[in-house]
Length: 281
Image 1 (tube, rainbow, N blue to C red):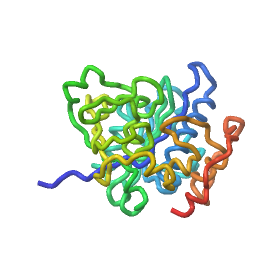
Image 2 (cartoon, rainbow, N blue to C red; image 1 turned 90 degrees about the vertical axis):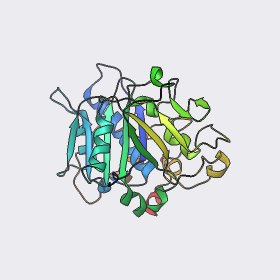
Image 3 (cartoon, one colour; image 1 turned 30 degrees about the vertical axis):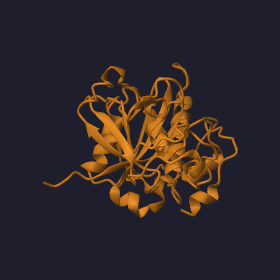
Image 4 (cartoon, rainbow, N blue to C red; image 1 turned 30 degrees about the horizontal axis):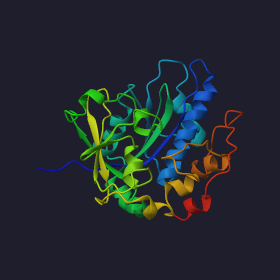
């Protein structure tokens, strides 16, 4: 029996969502910020993206599509997915559709979120990702001891406040799964390899995450000075969140291609991370 292709989360990003009723450009800016963070986290640019997934919109303006045009206004493949099924759609694009690198973006009540989902061949062709990516496994039901605490929002994969639900053997923790698996969080001394993220999409599936390299979670002292996503961002997103800079935004845009002109909504003025680190990958 042929096993299904492996799928990995290589980058994640989130930015606070503007209040309901805000101008469209505020929502687009939040999505651009989340996408920029996810691409920096993965150490790639939009040129690496084979497909993108965003939420189906019933309005005249699809915020996700507009945000993507800021990165590349050329012809690019975008799949629209029903709200709550965006991440599963991105996973299927890699697992069943043969895409090597998929960008998923969505905006929810609390935050704009972005994931870079990649194939095994992409992971190993970008070898620096081997100790930061998380392998994804889908299951039809959560473990019984978590079922009552299941989340139905993508924000709970990324959020900084209460409600972050990750499971490690013998203990519950409030750490973000992907970042906790990297050792970026306050899970000092944790030696677990696996985490069960209690996220349930439209199909009722949960997502199990574990380190791509199958190693134990490192301590903070082992990764504090490692040149990785937190270095490219210029801060540790597991313990704080900051806005992106214009430098960050320009670093991840498709290179040598046309982009939609950006206006006042791209007021990204924070000093960025080490852009040279991105170019060296």
